[in-house]
Amino acid sequence: MRLSGSCYCHALEYKLELESPEAARTSLCHCSSCKKAFGTNYGLTVKVPLMSFQYTSGKPKEFVGDNGSGTILHREFCDNCGSFILEYGDPVRDDFRFICLGSLDEPDALPPKGEFFCESRSTWMPEIPGVFHKMKIKE
Ligand SMILES: [Zn+2]
Ligand SMILES: [Zn+2]
Image (cartoon, rainbow, N blue to C red):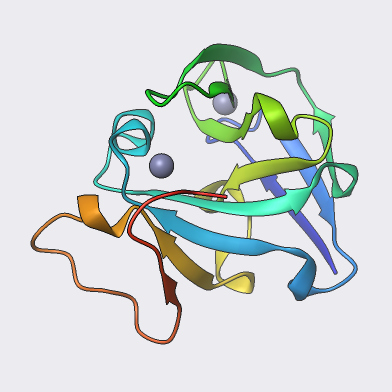
């Protein structure tokens, strides 16, 4: 399955080539690090093999920092419009990318399979039915 995505201003564009929808895992994350990075009450990313992802236009700006629990996190975004494109932890840098779902041109193609850090879920936000729920760790 071939998908494409971009930042808001299209300075950054990318393509995703997945063997199947099973090769991707979309999940919500309610941790405080995602709340800050996404500027909303949860993060929403799709985990894909590094090999399946490629920028086709532009070069992202990278922010590298501690996620609060000792893991170094890389976050890539557009330095023109500010759109957040993807993130990955240093331990999986050669294996996976976590793409911000809304940057896909067709985000509904990859619906969520689970939720992480449910212990930090906003009190007003209901659970997504029919997916896995973990209190903490995002693997
Ligand atoms: Zn942009
Ligand atoms: Zn998180």
